[in-house]
Image 1 (cartoon, rainbow, N blue to C red):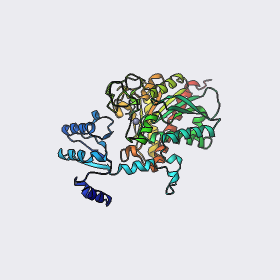
Image 2 (tube, rainbow, N blue to C red):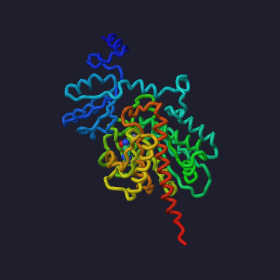
Image 3 (cartoon, protein in one colour):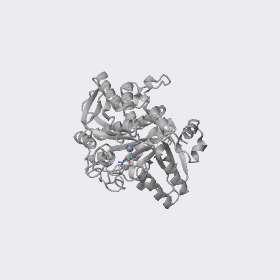
Image 4 (cartoon, rainbow, N blue to C red):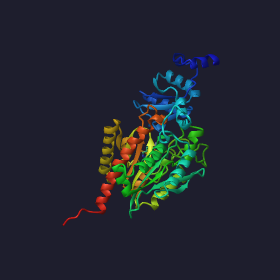
Length: 432
Ligand code: ARG
Ligand code: ZN
């Protein structure tokens, strides 16, 4: 049977797989839309009891009737899960029939692969490669780029932020961008690298980035969760949280985007270390979130714009995510994200939703954007980059450039608007 099974899979005889007599040999992503409360409950069960990984929504508690669920099902639980769905008459669609192939594609180092012509920035990089890149970038740009050690991770890896300072005007304001809070969202660190490269290459070439960099320093933290990122390369591609051990549970990891002090651990986060949205033992319990919070606290007078990069779902979000009411400058924030989304649509024909986090996706307390906002950084945004679920966290390298360019466009629009607003405040127009 095993031999036959292998043979048929090898021959790509899909029909045979669908009969269920032969265990799937590939990891898959399923899209399932529950139609009844009973189906909702069953799906919640499947996603917690079986070895699967929920892609969408972020936690089983958000599974609802008529809302699409994206579920990563490893080959070894495929048969059981599909059986269970079938027995409850729940239909599913296979979003990705062969996730392994995509994972392999993402980890391939194309510089040794003659078939590919993609550049460094159009590939995903291991943590070691990213540390090398940080070194090289500071070394090659000694007058404009500095690496700042802002802290270290739970497993004692350094957290370096790059400071881009393209000219030495006095009293320059600044923006902060962090990437890779969530380990499996690989497009996020790729964006931070892309952004730094673009800034250094197109300063004095492109009017928008020149204007921004002339008036702001930029701090870029390419990988805020290095332990988790490393783990997605070595052990579990679907890992989200950091890797800290809990005193009271065998489950590992805190959701760093629930660990900040913004309505910490209220509805939308969990005290259970075994969930994907575990808020940690107390606010800033994790060295990674504490490092970022400490840095921003000590730079809050210069930092006017806070950006944090996630994936997937194509959204431009702003505070609040930790409460339902509107931020004091809600209409400014809405206008900025609306303009950014319009530009993306115009130039890239891609749709980004925009709005306050809590109303646009779900209540998610303890997020870094809300915390930065409450600290006094009045322009704070979370970007959710490509895609809408076709590849999800496994966005192929060939799509990196599109995803990063559209996000870059949004950063430019928003940074320009922030400059306009804040400069208008510091230099009121002359009235003779
Ligand atoms: N997908 C992100 C998360 O679940 C959304 C973050 C929105 N912002 C926030 N402060 N929660 O963490
Ligand atoms: Zn995320």
